[in-house]
Image (tube, rainbow, N blue to C red; front, side):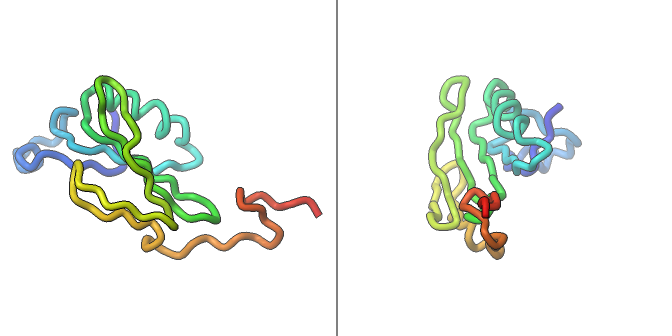
Amino acid sequence: MLVPDVVVAQGAAVWSGRSVLTPADLVLAVEVVSPSSTTTDRVTKPTLYAAAGVPAYWRIEPGGVEGPSVVTYRLSGMTYVEQATATADQPVKLNWPLSVHLAPAEWGPRRSAAPGATPSGRIADA
């Protein structure tokens, strides 16, 4: 059984009293990528969500110096197709699967770079 970090589900399923949602109940699955789940959140889970017919998948990348980003996907056949990417510098307004304005820069302060850090967050050679 997969457990997304966040789901948006059909109202009837949520209010039915069932303790477990099925993939058919879901409108959107969201995963927040962490160092311990990178491959699972970027490859394994979206593949399984697509095979189960979940219409939309969003991947939140907490980010580094540049801040967080959200990559949104829409199901096409049995795979997800990227729809939009919201970054700290480029918010996105979506109308599907729900109407929302994604503005990662507003989610909290950007991480400050360590002295001598490159844009990738690595310390440059002295």
